[in-house]
Length: 402
Image (tube, rainbow, N blue to C red; front, side, top):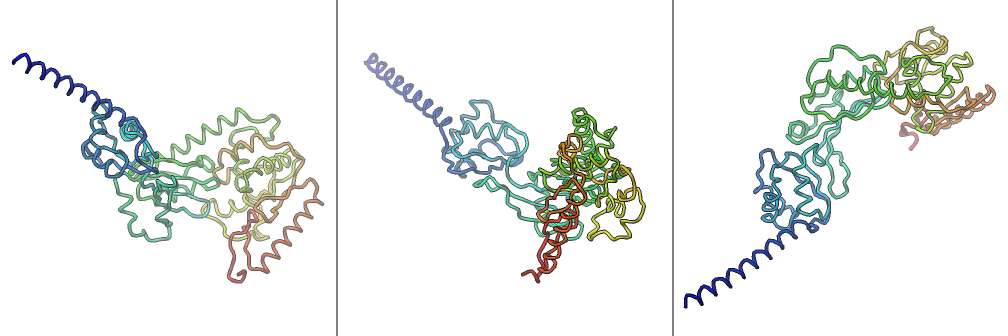
């Protein structure tokens, strides 16, 4: 009898062991097979959240098929150290892949971002959310801290634990504009002792933390521009009419302000290089404008004849060679263009009405191009269309144009 009972117990134990092994194998397979997500999802891990709660959350969001299996798998893999933040989980991610996303750490990959865009004309605070379905950001709040009241909801977003911050300095913005804008950024702290030298800040996008020091951010911008200039100076073309990195920065800033068309930068640079080589004056409006504004904002109008005739250090219609300093912060592409310009015979250019320019070799060709541009301006004026005084591109249409 006891032998029969023992035999039955052994059989039951083997069956249970077999079932347990099958269950473990099934669980392991569930952990690595594609998950139920039909489209990307943004998963937010709260500060201090535990594995049990996150497992339930993931199942509720439809990110994983079974929260219990996910929790057991995470503990078995010894990866239960969750990282606070918001993370984008791709479609059909397995539990193993989801675990890697939320425990790997690093910057959040979705959720809310505040991007402070410091432009040539205005600085705008832009709040945007990543749409998991399209993997694109959607703007929810936008305002100019210098002129607009703080919109409802902005401070709540700005003070949320997982909101990310970014400062983007546009190509062609001046150092004064950068400093003025940074002083208005409520998410930064610290005093700015002095405006950095013109041209010394690298236009780029900088990820920062709430409470970051303004001075340290400017120092990072300066260090990045120094590295860019140093690298490109070493790779410069031979025979350029500039002898120092500072002169390269000055020429690059003029190129930056003269064209907004990426493909034109090297051609525009060639015009100024040819003029310098031939002893011609640069005769470029942006330098004159800088001499009037000192880089503190935009002129907002065309130049007057008296301003073009005035002899100032920045009036390249009146002085020979380069102005004494850069007139803006040039981006890497403009520095590269200044140091490696196209080989062209051009010494003239004028707006062509598209935002680009018509280039000429002779004064006669140039005068004909200028005449065409003046005709375009007259036609636009008759229709109530305004042209950008620098690029010649259409900037807005008035009611008369409608």
